[in-house]
Image 1 (cartoon, helix red, strand yellow):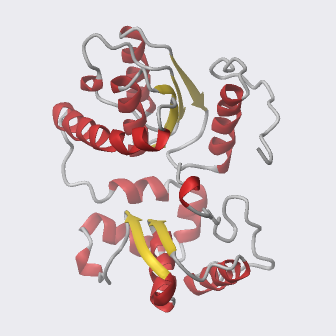
Image 2: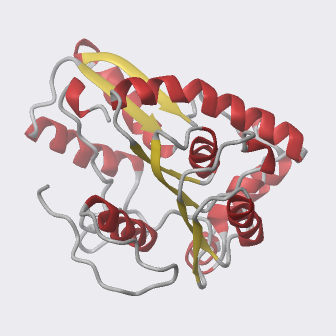
Length: 285
């Protein structure tokens, strides 16, 4: 969406995405300073030295802020999401989150991360109260309506495919429901949406949702209900249920979505939900 504005780089952190794992890694590997060293080398190799706009999120925001602080003359701006923007001590966290983080830093942390549901517990530990469906719908619809003008401007009259994960999936659903003439297809991942996103007289755009059966943050039954609601409003909606998968956006989920997305981009029919039909990944296109 922003490629026409300038050079766009999206590096995967070391050991994540398509980046290689560290050789001979151990308990002291993958620390902040190590990620910083590799990121610095990458940006230097790519000649990133001026007019830089950083888009950072979650843990990556720390790396972005740190790079910006050490290269102030190169940075034009920073867009950040879900970031820690100031130092925080233990007492600044809710008790449930504090207990979880301390456990993760203990000798039991490795087992919690590899065999448990540490990521999902971290997402839910800070929840103070649950929104009603009406409150959630108001927030989702407002966010979608504020986001749409920017999407429409970038699209310049063309139809768009919207993809979102977790809260972003709610927006993907809302955009498909509220702008069906401009949204060609929506891919909500590990999400759901309240029924109040639909507008009278509008048949929603097609959606193909993907959700893990072991998701404890947004249970899959909520997504099943959302897909049923799209069908009830006359829309085409399918749900791929991935056995044993939780809420995290994994490499396997990404590949699963890309396979289905490619079938649209190359003009073919979307594989049936749950299909294992092989599709050659897009390369250099």
